[in-house]
Structures are given as C-alpha cells and as structure tokens.
Image (cartoon, rainbow, N blue to C red; front, side, top):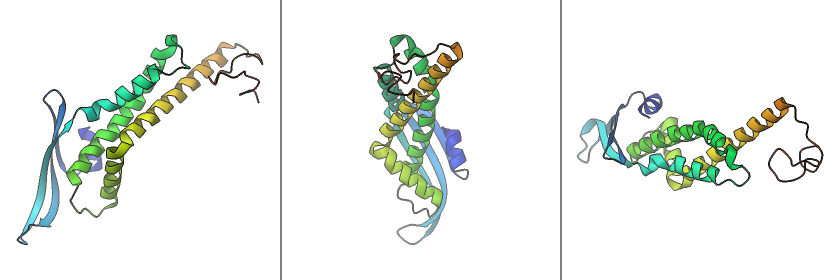
Length: 181
C-alpha cells in the first residue's frame, strides 16, 4: 500500500506500519507552505493516525460471503469462483486503503490540484458507501470471469447444446429462449 501511495504522491514522506493486532499506523510529511494563526510562515505538515483493520478486511468478507452464497453456482465450482475473485479483491484493496489514508491526511489542507481534488472526491465516496460499491463491482466482475471461464471450457469440450438444454449463462431458462438467438 505504501508503494501505491508513493505513486500518487511522490513528494510526500510516507511511513506505514502495522501496529496492534488490528490497525495500520501512518505518518506522512506533506511539503506544504502555510501560515499559522499569528501569520508566521511555516513549511511542511506531519500528520499521523491509525486506520482500523476493518477498513482492510471489509472487501474479502463482503465478496467471499456473497460469492459462496451465490445460488446459481454449484458447490463443486465455488472454489474456482473464489480463485477468480482474488485479483478483484486485491484491486479493491489497493484502491481503497491508500486513497482512504490520503483522504484522511489531506482533509482540511487547501491543496489546489486536480489530483488532490480526485483524492478528496474518492475519499468521500469510499467513506459514504463506496467500499460496499467496490465490493459489488468485485463480485460482479468475478461472476463475469467465472461465466466466461466455464462457457469457454464447454465450447472447447465440444459438447453440443440442445435447444431444450439449460442455458449455459446460468439464467435458468432454456437455451432456445435465452442465448440461442
């Protein structure tokens, strides 16, 4: 996560550490020129804080629980579905945690750049239901990858589909009424 933050903010001095069993501690020095209450010019701000591990664990919990309970996937193929979901869970984590930390650090600092505006926007989104949205995106991308994976395997196996067979898309309809056309 520290690497992703350095890509987004190369001029910040970033230090992340895992403290206690369930927290990520951060200390970030921002090269920012500002004036204090007396009008004296200051350079640089150092912000420290801790992020609860619930922010880190929410995506795997939501995605895996939804996928394992998905009704149209047989139990014999749920392992494949879980393996296909891992890259999407990782992508959600790599977007969520660094943006959340940068949002907390930059909150209240008047940075006038497009990048700072995007971090503020995504921080508000992630803080107000965006984590669940990212998890839903990961769920549906996993289901799409699973469907494409098994359709390709059926085509490679050369098993012909009959008109009255169940549709391979998993809709539950007959093939002739769903994807045949």
